[in-house]
Length: 165
Image (tube, rainbow, N blue to C red; front, side):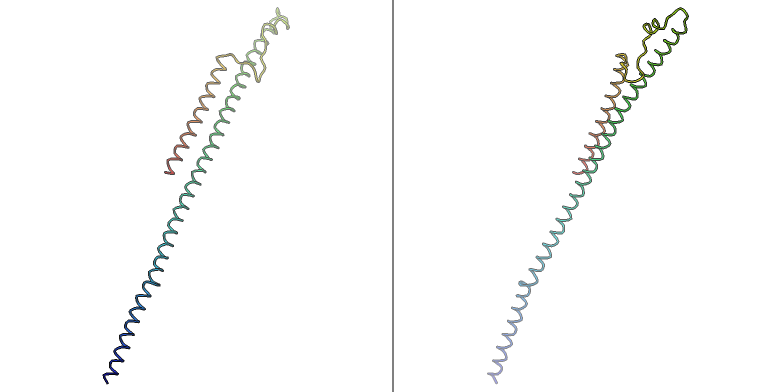
């Protein structure tokens, strides 16, 4: 019987060692590697989310810069259009004044038509040569408006760049 007990004890110890080894083997062979895989997957997901966020921020900044550039181009076009319109309007006023002086001269019975034309030349209604002071005033107003456009663009670019950081 002692032999039998000895055999049972040996088998029990072998089975216990096998179970303990199996537990340790499961822990180190399956459980820990799967945790590492999960941790790496989570890190990759976080890195991907951060990269996506940076990509969206860069795209948003690019859109803001493009919108600011379009607004700048529109502002410059408005400044030029306003300049040309004011120049043409000034030409019309001078033309009308010249034409009025010519008409008044022509109404005078003592004046001839050629004499009136020589004394009161009529400037064209468009694309005329304005007096220097008037031309300088219109040019300064246009340049000031262009400066405002540039300042708006720089402010928009500065705002867009600081929002990214």
